[in-house]
Length: 65
Image (cartoon, rainbow, N blue to C red; front, side, top):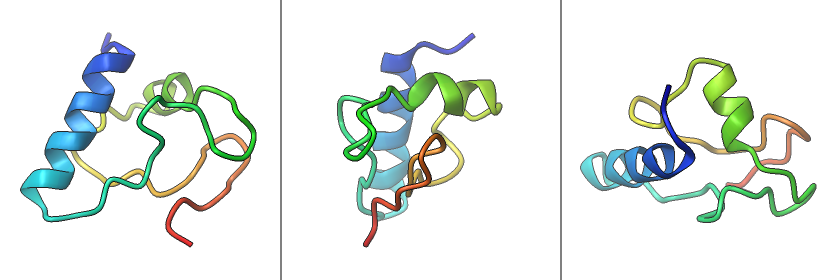
């Protein structure tokens, strides 16, 4: 199982390699609902290395508006 620090590192690396902006909160807590989004993303089978996180999987707030 991946850790939260690994998830954030994977997401930062993905952004650098794909010249994409880092939208997700750097501490993993949603700007709107203040909940930790990383456990929900990991539970959904994501590891941060294959797609850009652009919103909260818990309250569905977009981070790219």
